[in-house]
Length: 338
Image (tube, rainbow, N blue to C red; front, side, top):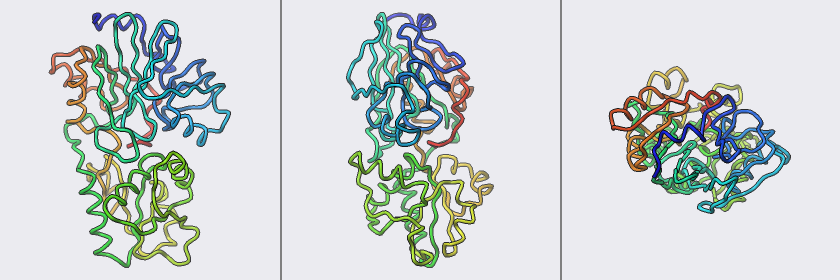
């Protein structure tokens, strides 16, 4: 394989995002461009107005549902592992494990291979195709939780905490803040896997994405809207956007026990500041050990780091004997997939 330093001639960060000059496209651009490859449907990666979009069929469905049927000029779905050549550059999409339809972008050009991971996680998730490591010369990684303090708890044990609280406080409504795309559906799947078969109640903002997951063949069991309830839902589980935890909306519920599912719940001060009684450390990103493991597994000589705790990870990459670079791309600060 060619020297990793050669990548700067055909793959470069610009104000719009990471641009593949040789192929004439951007990956997850933050403003409208002629040709975009989109890794997944979260709003800081999938934006409207592009001339042409290449993505998995699931990501395209999510974009249309969230941004409108005409949010791009044209859409081209690409199956995982299927190669496509654009202007002499071969592109493949490989599972990223982050949410439904999420993908890493594998780019090959003149004997070089770059992998742009987007957002990814290594933990098993019944609602997403598992992450697939790819050997490469250059690996572009996120750094959302790239500090040694971040070590996510097993998600089954966190769900166990929730169910134990439900049993200990059967008179209270357990209200969980969870992002509408990816996190909410994963929580529902985890609850079902733990044997919780009761109806799960939803804030209206979560309905559309749960319906979309169902259309994509991911069964979520019995779901109903809180607005349809005839009582204050004592002893029930309610999912809502994190922003709704402090809303008047929750006042209709019985002595709400507030919970929040996020990797940030590892930071106790952040949980206290959010007024969360039951922090659930459930993240859709890698923790520190998983980031290091993934970087090693790719065998990449050069690592570019985007959006997150870049400095700490670049330092660690250098300690591993690899070439690290912080891209400092702007526009990916949305914590939607935390």
